[in-house]
Image 1 (cartoon, helix red, strand yellow):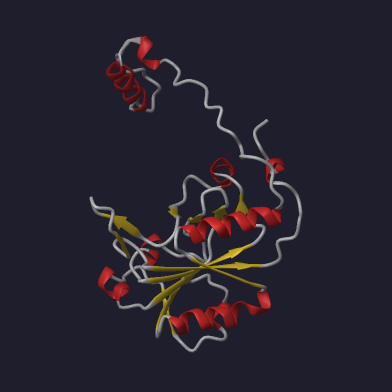
Image 2 (tube, one colour; image 1 turned 90 degrees about the vertical axis):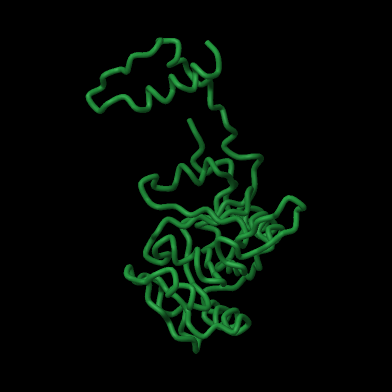
Length: 233
């Protein structure tokens, strides 16, 4: 069986109707894709090490990383918005109200009827997240109450994302996938939006925020190790 037959066989299998009727295709086309023996995580890390690795990778991707405790969060958010000259801030419906208690900006609610043009007139967007992945420096949003709809983080030029550490930080992609609900709309973010042309000239803000501020909130004591966080088996 060649590669074409293998790929087409998998497509046919995926398109089998809901009654369980197998489509006409050679049985060999349904051969196993092989073992998926991915590593659950690459080494053991304490909660403190996990958070440090997340911050390191986010910085490498040109995100701005900040740390604070819950009491200092409103003041830090206010400073980050002031630094961007933000006047209007888009906020999801379930955002904790005290996050903006020190800010003077006008909060703009996330409304389904808003067009892309309306969202483009917003200066900043403030959200929480579902998870953050240390090994890849990735933030995952899944449309939760403090995150809102996907497009509100894709249009405004400045995004402030709050991550609760250590509870929302996992080591690896497999750990993240195991915790996420696959039926929810997900946005995976690794740094500000960027692209490069054929000569590798980097341009930021093409299909998402030009500036990404990530706020890590909480203490990240030694705690338990990543490798023990609910791995397979």
